[in-house]
Image (tube, rainbow, N blue to C red; front, side, top):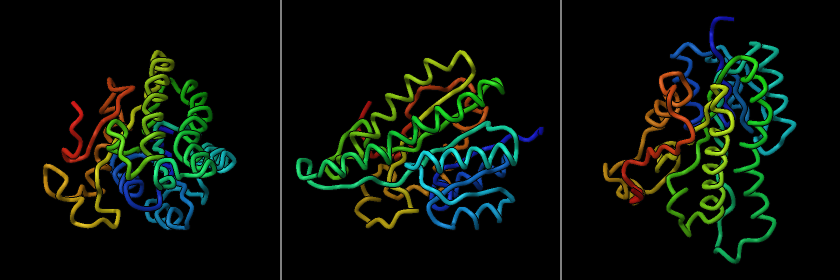
Length: 233
């Protein structure tokens, strides 16, 4: 087929859904996955396909890839947007919750990469984008497990880009700040240099840029779209 295809894991609501809509405007066919039926409603709206499932379940990821390939025969772009892992006081977080954070945040990125990379190798290229968090490089005690494992995703992203860049397969991270798709108090908006929350649609435009050939010479990067919240230079 001539049209390109974007697979979105976590594509039912919020930034994932906004990115699905943005990629559709760019002419991409869509395959979506989310834990709830919201991905199925969105896929119907955008003339795509969808499967209910969770990123941390390898069998769900495999099933989505199979559905995508059966429907379209190719995968040009993949967005991975997982939910927030457990929180808590640093040394009070249980081993079970640390393991859950690992399974929710880092392992899906590795699993998806293992599954889609052979497909992209056969096609001659592709782009993978991991949505993480603004605090990946400025760890916060408010989000301890997220801070630990999101920066691990950036490290994996750099390693992946070095390994598969010669085959025109790119991987980048998008590090969003506080976004209006979450139910956040006003104090978080005031943390931004812009004194407002990001719009999910703004984050989606950045994600779509990284997913598409518009960013063809960008790989291995962690792009902050946080409205100036972080101080890292």
